[in-house]
Amino acid sequence: MKVVIADTSHIKYAEIICETIAESAAVRGTGIAKRTPEYISTKMENGNAVIALDGDKFAGFCYIERWGHGKYVANSGLIVHPDYRGAGLAKQIKHKVFAHSRKKFPDAKVFSITTGFAVMKMNTDLGYKPVPFSELTDDPTFWDGCQTCKNYDVLTRTNRKMCLCTGMLYDPKAINNSEAKKIKDKVFKRLKHIKETMFLKKDKK
Image 1: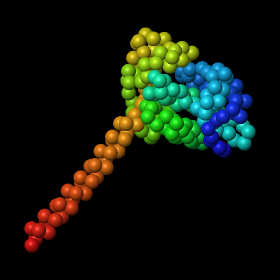
Image 2 (image 1 turned 30 degrees about the vertical axis):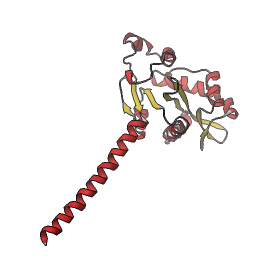
Image 3 (image 1 turned 60 degrees about the vertical axis):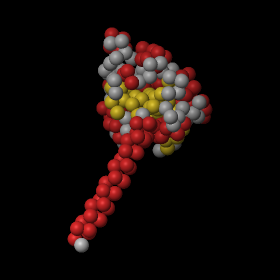
């Protein structure tokens, strides 16, 4: 099994990818926006997709979308073929496409909307935080892409404020600030410990 950045050599899998996405939505009864083989092919041509292959057999897929003039990116269409589910492949694909997104678009906020608990768990492990839809991209083209979802009426009735999906966001700046704070706190505690030790030794004298 290999999980790689998709390119033009993988366009032959575009049809089965779309079929697998549609079949998964029907079986689970959840909302998944449909995509055409042409759309999937474009993602591969631009190097904005990840594909999992077992030899020459399709196993899984996910792609990257850019919104708001590059301020946001989304990892969408995560799918694993039924023959390969339950073996942790979705997590491998998710981590691969997330790392690729961060490398290719380092300053962009990465967001996700999903009804799947497994995806929410993977997002949380990667540092995503649950957020209201107002903190996601306001690019109308993104939300227009939800029209093929069975729950689109919920989204429109609430003026795009909420739906059955959960919005999740990875903000690189917020993450960096958090990490910096942890480092500062650690340094502060270390300095405090050194000072306290010095004062104790002084008092003993």
